[in-house]
Length: 157
Image (tube, rainbow, N blue to C red; front, top):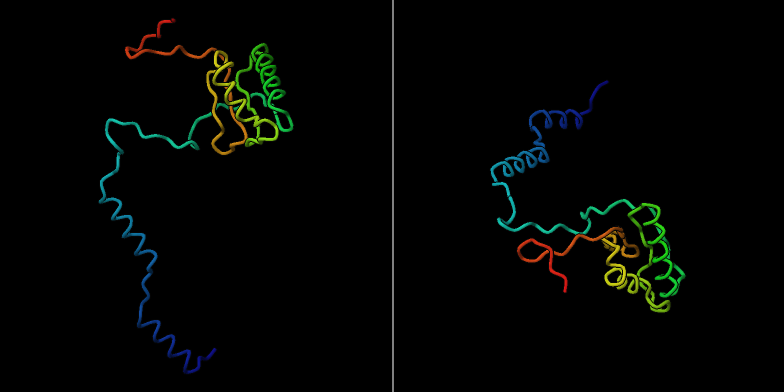
């Protein structure tokens, strides 16, 4: 196959003008810069706070969906489910409460409040799931005793 004048000119230009791989050069420069940079170890003497998405929540063994319940019905249903799980020997419950609808008495608010007050003697962990504000995880069991500044259990009043 014979080349015309334009093709010959283009081929000659390509052979005489080498191309530089700019992506490769940039990548090598970034790697050299990263190797020369001191490693960031974070603040000393203070633990770095982890983001909610990195919380290690236990895997739910059961779940209850409270959509359509009024706040009173929802609280009663969750309390019954907690009792049933404790009897069955299960310990992790996912509560699907939705984001909080004032028309139904804001089920999320009621469940949050009861988990921190009335049910606190049966719940060791209660957290809203980081990727889904419409559900929470409850870990059932006897909570650890609260400690004083010396690391000993607080005296009961």
